[in-house]
Image (cartoon, rainbow, N blue to C red; front, side, top):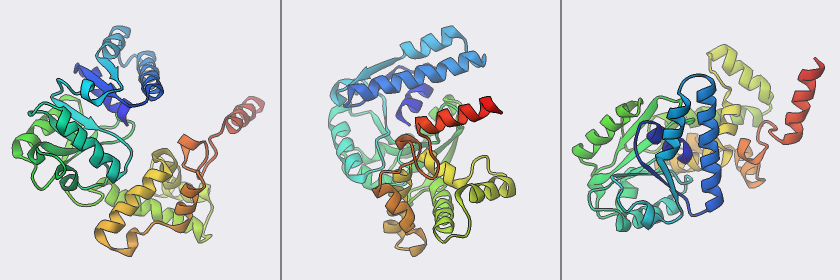
Length: 285
């Protein structure tokens, strides 16, 4: 998500400081941005000059203090872990100029709770992009209890400048997107867990029967099963409603390190051997 957000801002002409404490992660992020821009050039969506300009707009940092020194806006996109996010926002609050807006790309955690650890709760807001960020139009704009109208209006208008469609959302666990999506994914996992049907069968029903572009189990793999579990836990803790309790199968898969695409295996196999097998079958056919 972080490299996608950086890509989107940079392509829209903004100067972007991409920050990660790990140099290898920064290199991987820039490689991903470059590959995605190459695809856009190949499809004639952008020119080679626009690609180069986008890359020129991005500077990488491993230090938060250096990266945010002159920032007008910071968009945090760390993993969906409340303790980590609170720690980052404390650091950002101390390091950023007084007029910097602090946004979070959280998909479920309370904006009010995050804002409370800063000295600028009026300037903290949720800016929940959809993945892949350069392609997906939606941005949920989430107001915390203290978010000012000025902050909201600024981020709402900025989202339009990025070519996105902003939607105003209030601060409740899961917001809108994941409050609806995650129970569906969880119920799909329950359906598999109960032996009602297999992985491909469940996804096929939802794709062909409900016109979803991707089945819920495949989508969970792309989101990351650990992320799905974290979001469901936030919603379960927030609502105290058993309908949000994560399926035991999901819990066990995360414990086993089967996280989906990023780990090479989830409900589907994304390993290199599987890719080679797929290519071989296509060649033979």
